[in-house]
Image (cartoon, rainbow, N blue to C red; front, side, top):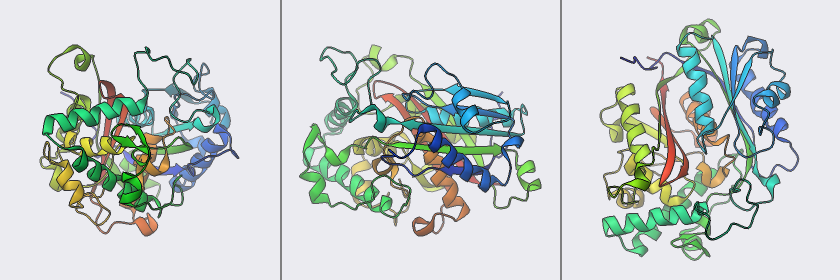
Length: 399
């Protein structure tokens, strides 16, 4: 039987570039920005890294060239560098590989890094591979806002929620995240917004308006992991260790079964159950202290809180409006601003989420710092509601 990774792998150091319209920087520059911070934080040199995993999805820096762009940009010491991609969960996939390599004893210190330069594509949303900016109406994969608007519609139908109540709840989600992002110097969007602005914004895909959608951004994030024993030998204290790391990939059931009603993400529910089992969590609403979830759209965050078994099914609207997930609430969600304020450089997002959990647990989140962060959870979703991959990481103080 698998033993899991609970407390077997520690975060040695992390780094994150400033996210935004980084016309001033190449993908390589962003990698170096994140990597330099991670190295300094870890207190090691690049020569001490045994293996690395490189996440990028759309950007030319990774297409057809494997791991060499990262090896060259960071001047890594002729180690194995493997390029990974798993839709929008590629960053989490890189972390999973690095963590498993250390847990297996294959290497002592491993690196996971993700990067994307989406602004350079000239596309206002997530680019569709090989199709350019004009997408035929018959194309089987609709653009992201349309897919997640269908999630919103299915949720309203299943739980008999009227449009006004849903709009108020997801408006609160966006207002909350922008308030958090305003306190984060690395976020792309740092302006607070009002509920009135959200409710009166132009509709992108009914019922999702402009402020319900995350932006397109450039950015990079890096994570260096090792064993707790090595971390201690290097002088590290207050270790942050992985309690669980689970991934679930759709097998097509959602599209080929009448059992799925379109109101939730099946992979998220499966990955969450596995992660809680691995971490020994039996009451997530009480035991999880903070979350970073994949809020590509405000409704995605709302639905995800139920898929993670935090809010009861059909009860997320009440929890959101009651402030459960606010910075001052019992279970803060997107305390750094989330995708809503960072944008979504696909290859980097999963690692960026982990970066905030790490800072909070280290007490280094500045004016965003929570008083008692406890156990942190990241939820990284890739693909569309009907066909996706979901990765969940749970981290906390070393026991």
